[in-house]
Length: 91
Image (cartoon, rainbow, N blue to C red; front, top):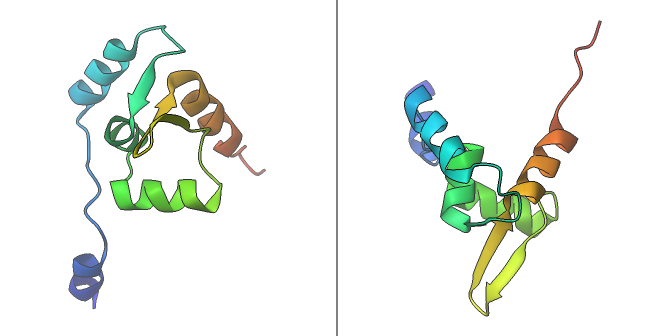
């Protein structure tokens, strides 16, 4: 059963610690930098399909329309989205 479920789930890119660190260093402190959609999905640890689903539902970060067929997400909007999704420990 697990094998069947694993085959149905989209492959989510997994970053090593080094890749994660390099991605964060590339972003730096430029909060207005616009990430391409694939960059954002990878940084968020999501498949592109799941990222699109989240944005289409209106549950994602604010989106910048770069051209008629291309979107991006600003670093500050990504961080704000993450902060809003952070759960507090239940005690």
